[in-house]
Structures are given as structure tokens and as C-alpha cells.
Length: 124
Image (cartoon, rainbow, N blue to C red; front, top):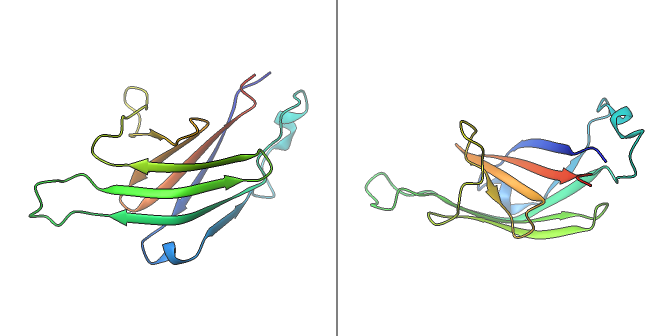
């Protein structure tokens, strides 16, 4: 079975955290890559309960924090995601810092107020 990484980039701020983010896969996504697999392609997901803390420039703790809830009913994934000073970076060398959610099939990148979500599917 092929390994497919479904990567979604969404810009979120604390103001947008009031409402859940609902995402649907773009109509032009090349679904033919799934023709030879049995996997369930994520069709949509929800990000809610986003809480972000960014330190003031004078704060000695210069690590921002992010906490949110991720749900994908189609793949059955329901997990919480956290980033703080102690969260290990699981990215490859030279890649943007990436963090596992409680379910490691979901990873995220939090840079400059933008949340990038990675849902690993069809990894055999």
C-alpha cells in the first residue's frame, strides 16, 4: 500500500479560534493516486478548541504554545494536539519544525500564526 501524506495549510489566528475550522478536500485533488489502494482518503476535518499563547518580547519564555482538537470522521481520527517548549520536534533535518498530535498520524507545523496539518493515510 502506498504512503500518502495529505497536507493542508490553514491560516488561523486567535480571533478565528472562536469558531471551528471546517476543511474539505479541494475538488481538483488528484484522487487517481488512490485507484490502486484500499485506503480511505480524508475528505474533511474539523479543528476546534484552538488556544494560542505568544510570549511578549520581554518574557524569558520565548516559546509559543498551541493547543487544539482535530477530528476526521471519515478516517475515524479524533485527537488533541499540543505545542510548548517541551514538545519534541519530529521533523526531518532541514524541514520546518513539526509536532505529533496525541495520535501520531496527525502532525502539525505552527509558524507565524499559521497552522499546517499533516494527516498520514494509507501507510500500510
